[in-house]
Length: 306
Image 1 (cartoon, rainbow, N blue to C red):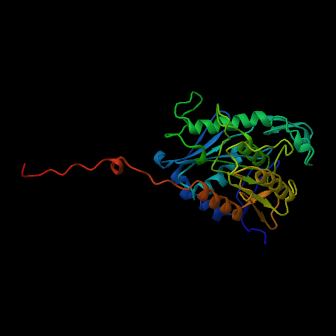
Image 2 (image 1 turned 180 degrees about the vertical axis):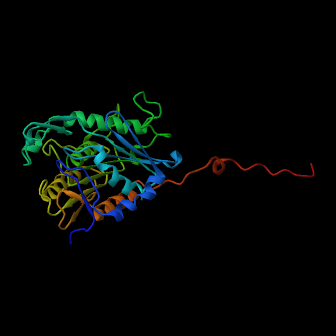
C-alpha cells in the first residue's frame, strides 16, 4: 500500500508536506530546536538547549534541490531526536550534463543514470571535501574553520555523527562515509551510521572501504516505484558494499540494511522517515546529561562534637 502521507523531493521539486496533520506535528520540534542559516546556503537545526546536543546528522539534498527543501522533513525527524543537531548544506550551482547542461544545485555532474555513467561523477571529490570539513568541525573544539553557527559546545566523537542524504545527496553520503579518512589520519571515519534515501553507490568500481569503517551501519530506504533511481539501485549498492565487507577482516557484511516502500516513487514517505528516526535512535541514542553535581565528590561528614 502506498503511504498516505508523503512529500516529494526529486530533480526539480523541493520537499513539501501534503497533509496538515504532519505540519501540526512539527510544533514540538520547533520548541526544542532553533534554525539558523549561513551565507553559503547551509541550514542548521540545533537543540535549543546546547547541553542536550550529543550527536549530529549531516543531511545532503538531491539534485536540483537546496537545504531549504529539507527543513520540514528534518524538523519532523528532529521532533523525535531532541539531542541531535542537523546540518543541511546546499550544493554549488553548476551545469549538469544529464539535464542538457542546465545549471542547478548539484553535488557532482551526472552524465547519465546507467551504471557506466555513474563511474564519472565530476565534482564528487570536491563535495566530499566539503562534507568532511563539516564532520571535522563537529569533532574539533577550537578548529579555525569552525563557525558559531555550526560548532559544537563540546566536541563529538566520529561515532556520534551520521551522514544522510536523498538521491544524489544519498550517493554522496554513502561514498564519503565509507571511503574517506579522518583528518591527518590513515583511519576511516568510523561514523555512527549512514542513511541513504532513494540513492545509489557512485563510482562503484573504484569504491574501496577505508580501514576503520567496516562496521558502519547503513540504512538504505527506497521506493519500489522509483522512476528516477530504480529500486534495483538499492540492491546493487548493498551487493557491492557487502561483498567488500565480506572480504575484510572485521567487516560486517550484514551492516547494510535495505528497506523498500510499495507504491513510492522518487520521494520520501512518512513511514520511511519513521524508519530513519528509529535507525538514528539506535546508532546515535541520547546520552544522559551528567551534571557537575553528579560528578562532585561527596563532602566529608563533619563531627558536630569537634
